[in-house]
Amino acid sequence: VDLFFILDVAVNFLTCFKHHGTYEDNRASVARHYIKSGYFFFDLVLSVPLSWIQLIMMGKECRAAATLVLPLFRVFRLLRIVRLMKLFRLPAFANLNPFVVKLLQLATGMAVIMHLAACLWWLFKSMDPALDDFMDQHNLVKDDLWAQYISSLYFSVATLTTVGYGDIHGSTTNERLFALATMLLGAAIFATGISNISSLISSQRSSETEFQDRMQKVRGFIDFWKVEQALSEKLIAFFRHEHQVEGWKTNLALIQELPIHLKDELITQLATRLFSNCVLADSPPAYKRALFMALRPSRFAPGESVYNQ
Image 1: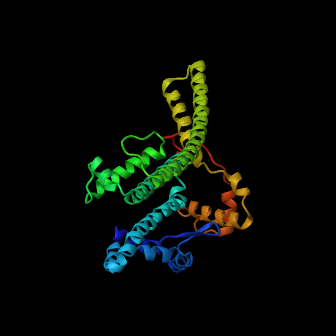
Image 2 (image 1 turned 120 degrees about the vertical axis):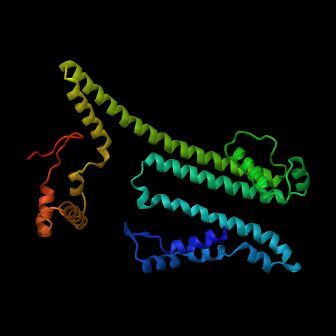
Image 3 (image 1 turned 180 degrees about the vertical axis):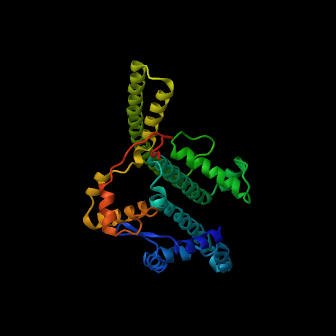
């Protein structure tokens, strides 16, 4: 675990950041941004191995401070996991289905919150004078950290999902107050997450319903005119293909809405890429931009010949 925290600091020096709408990947700029952001010193301190801190606080005069510092240090370490949510804003996730991204965000956020709630609840439980009785009642051993964690996670999941308590529940005032705050947090998270997912499902169903209506009209046309089977299969394959690539079609109207400098930069890049493997590759950039804007898309069915010599 300590090694992963140290490697995370190194990886942050190689991770691009967003600046004025574009992603900056220059290593010197990335390093300066990471240091100036304040995360560097936060990450560096929390990357110190716990064994070093325990070794420093081995003296009798430091044992009381160690019982408070070490749990807090572990909790602050866990807060670094929350920063993983920034990954969903990177360009790699831009091409994913919004429904999938929302599900990943919700699952990641819930996993982190459940984990933090489990750790915090055990911190409160460890302050309970009746801790030994609790562990004996639930067959827990002090050296078995995995069993303690599963018991804490069981409590946090039951609290966040508000399904009610079974054999493990809060027995002190602090534990009940913590459980109350966790219930309210869980209710808010689930309400927000379910609302977002419901809206995405609704929009997807609307798009799918529109496609099914269109395909029904196509089949009705085929049946009415008694189109031959081979040709009817080509028609259905074409409309299915159109539906699959609908989100990737080139829409030149969108280019006209861009600011002049951004439009020129985009057209230059697209035109250079489009004409890079033909006789127009060495043409002047202005000519390629004008030719690109004069092009109009044509539709072809899958497997159809575009040009026969």
